[in-house]
Image (tube, rainbow, N blue to C red; front, top):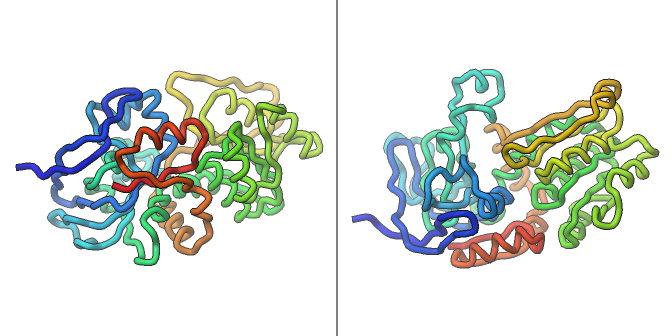
Length: 347
């Protein structure tokens, strides 16, 4: 007889239902975690609005991947965790032995998709063995579940900032001031950027960007963001530009507003099949560095959690609403419309 729980189930694009389903059964090396708080994510919104062939392979499916909670059950062979322990875990893990793992690029490990965690918008979630091994951490009693649940997205941001090579005194432009953009602003400042320029269409996000540390705010609906960045940098462009939207148009804008010999970090994932154009003359003679940055490495997870525990990230700016699990569709719509930052979902 299967035990039951309440969960948000993904049926199709725009069709997420709050209903009863089976509590996941765990196997060797796995954990069953009682979810304390789950957070909405831009990827969840994209999945809700256009589907996701990797996260959602079969429907109906459990949904959501940013969470923290308390261990309910421990699978056979698990040594470092026990029932009752407060933990946070990411949504995937590498194998540790493949071509990319051996080259310190575990974020490109082919096994990531095999360990994907989905189901945070529920009362309980199963944590696969690879995630238990690589990317699950105990959290202190003093750390709220909602703050701890920021670990996975912040780890991705730590990776993005690491790849951007920000130097002391740099001007950094961030396109997109959603939760990821806000974290990029915060960490860019902590890594020595003297000026951070943020651009976003939503008024709420522009206002929060100021509180997060942005020095200059751009509303792309009222002015050309490329021209404004050039204006603020004596015509050169920003030293580092980080795109955190995931649209080909803003990818192209990011390259255009990067100075010669500067770095463009394409952080936001664009839809499958889309393309963007780069001026080959400027790319070559301007010695541009254009980087795609994806996901995280286990060490970034450890670093992110330490930043949160130390209070080096203003979590209050990143989570704007709290809602019960049955209001998950409302939460996703709110975030999609730019009317919220992350929404804390409590089962």
